[in-house]
Image (tube, rainbow, N blue to C red; front, side, top):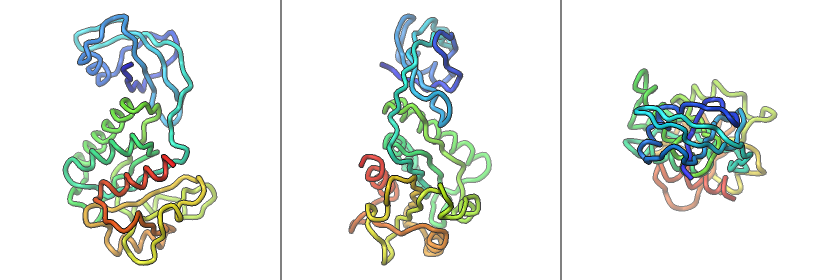
Length: 246
């Protein structure tokens, strides 16, 4: 059954107009009045789960539906993993966000690293973040997740560290740094227990030595995925799969 993200308030029996993106998708699929669909709110807070719905009316640019029964179904990973990922070039970041959402990432923070090819600021940055958030929404519609991971504003590592509580604060996420330097431990050894994790991975060419030093000074533990050097968009996904699908 087609699934659509609908951030409006959802309640059984309510009649609502779908948001523009979902309405266009319904029209592309050529659904008709009486057809059944599934809606989900997608917020990290809120009702969660998903709702049955029925198409009531197809307008030229709008679609009205009636919300049906709520189903308290969640398909979230058992461990919350927050990805702090170096911004990669061209469509590779789109692919990374899409697959991270499918694998159950809790949030994505694009990292403006020293070696990032794509530099974001101002209006261009806002448009890119909105685009990546839409990519995450579409991935959740496809894969069955009912909570959409937040794509945060792009930030450099020093600014990110300043905005966080100190490492080791009660309730704080464990911090893991993907690194090629000596002294790393395997990911499964570094990720202990089932606590939330912030996973830091660099762009093409990796993080600079100075950036890795900042991370290590602020509580990140250096981990490795093995003897092969993976691409910037592949490495964090391999780590996510290991952390969320185990």
